[in-house]
Every structure is written in C-alpha cells, then in structure tokens.
Length: 409
Image (cartoon, rainbow, N blue to C red; front, side):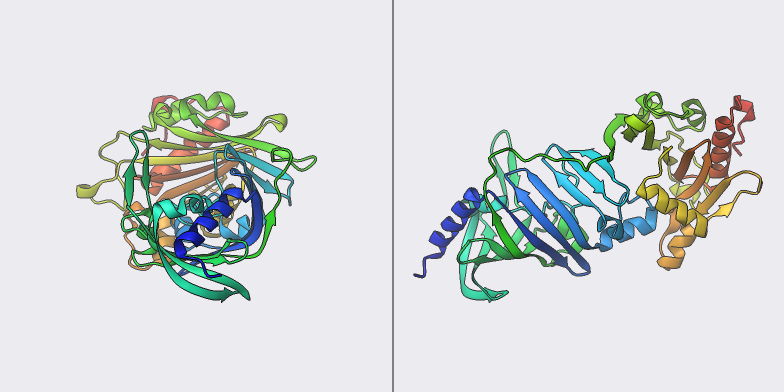
C-alpha cells in the first residue's frame, strides 16, 4: 500500500529511534572530495571507522601550505578510529600504537558537518522539515522511496539552546523495507562552513551500501585496545605548564627572549607515560609590532608567530615533515650544525604560481639527544629562524646563553 509522505516520514523517524545500530560502507562525495569508509555505529554514541578512500582537496591544500595536517588521506586509510562520544582512539595496527584524543575527532571531511554514520536527524524528520514526495525508485537493486526536504526554519532559539540547520534542501532515498536512508543528497546553507569550502551551490552526496542492521547489545559498548599496544594520551594544556610534563628541556626562557611568551601559548601534548615518550605542538604569538621579514612590506607587516612541534617520539606528522626537510630543506651556513632550514614560499610558488607568499612560513628542523624539533614561523625571515634554531640547539647542548650571547640578528 502506498502511504502518504507524512506517514512514510513518521515511519522512517520511528525506525531510526528503534534502530540499535548498523554497519555499512559509506561514501561521501562533492566535487573533488571523495571519502569511502566502513562504518559501525552502535547505540547513540559509539562509532567505529575504517577509511578505505580519503581524497579531500581542502586537507591537501592545508598540508601543501603549512605541513601541519596531523594525518593525511593515505595515512588515515591505514588506521582505525573508535569514538564513544567522550574520547576517540586512533589505532595504528602496523605499529600497535594508539592515540587517545579528547572528544570526537574522526577526521570528518566537511567543515561544520558531522557526516560519518550520522543519522540522528531522522528522529525529528516530520517536525523539522517540509516534505515532498518524489515517488519510488531503485537504488542498488533495492526499492526506495525518494523524499525531498527543506528546513521549516533555518534557525530556532530555545532560550537555553539554539538550532541552526546547515542545509538549504535535501533529497533522501529510503529503503522501503527497512526505512534506512541509502542515499542523501543536499545543498549546504549559504554562509555555512561547508558552503565556504565547497561553494554555495555545491551538492554533497552521502550514500550507504552493504547495510546490516545490528541488534541491541546486552552490555554497553566500549573500546578494547589491542593486546600489547602502547598508548599515547593526547590533551590540551597551557604552554606555561608544558615544560614540567616533558622528559626533555623546552628552554622557555630562550623562547621568551625571542618574544614568544609561553604564558600566552597553547599546546597539545601526547604522552606515553609508561615508556616516557612524549610529543607536543605549541603555538606562540608575539607582541612585536615591527617584525622584519623578507616577504613582508613595511606597510603590511605581520606580527611574528611560531609553531613548535617537539618530541622524543616521532608522530606521523613529524615523520612526514622530516621527509620534507630531507627533500627540500637546506643546511645552515655552518655545515657542522645538524640544522636544516626551509622557506616554504619557494614550495608555494612552485605548486601555486602567482600565490601571495607573504604568509608562507619559514621553518627549521634539528635532532639532538633523542628529541626532534620542528619550528615553523610567520612574520620572521629565514635568518631569524636560523638564529632561533641555533640558540635552541646550543641550549640543548648545555650552553647557558646570556642575552648578549643570543645569535639574534
């Protein structure tokens, strides 16, 4: 019997509320973006993700410009990710290493959208959306009912909370037997993060195949680490408190003399307490109003900023950056010092002809006493970066540098 669109939407909503979980292969596509992953969602919070394809032009651009992307597509495809809503565990089975991150950090491909296995919007489908019936179709040889959606309102205030709908319109193909949404196509709302990245008229398609509906579990779902794995716990921390957490010296006073005050910094620390291994990324800004840079005009000067990644363990990002220095970096004038330098503006011009290189970072890398140091700065020239790296290296060698001894140009 062919039911009304309102009745069908109500049935789809009830089926979503009653569904204990599912597993499927999910695909997300828009223009050059293509993500394919195995998804297992159990209950309202727990999700397991295994990426098979991860092509994301936005992430690739970020990596080309800065080198700071934590995990690029080919690396993600070798990992598994589990999230219970409170923590995310990134598991590298090739090294039996786990990074436990706070909150949900699943490398969602579209800014501002939770797309991986996310179907909770179906639970309030009739209440939130205007519905249009497009009749019956087939999808992967399954009979489907195609329903068009538009938010009844784009924004709703509920005194102590607000709801904003990130789409203009959508079309969903529902399996007529299970009411599972096999295909979802939508246009992001104007001004949304997704529209700013993909374009105001972009179409995003989310599809599922090989769907299996899961039964309810008698016990709550939790993450179980592989036997013998090493665990890094990641957490945000004030840069002022970081030094005491590291098994090596950070030389805060030297950074402060260069105008980078740790008290104003923020940091992400990943620590394997059992094996005394840590790595951290710290962001510093400076109050210097007149930085001297080769790439900045006197009328449009940049305030110096520094990102420092350092650790006695090499993360995926650190290994990738070390390879970049090996391929494109240059040694210091004093060849006896194990410091390599990189002016990323040269890479920008090679990859993106005509790009404004004023914001291109200058970088340095060295290794000493088992710790690996990666410095990336804007609003400073390569000579200033070389001096900072040299002083940090000398301080690591045990030299106590007075202000007059600093090699700042």
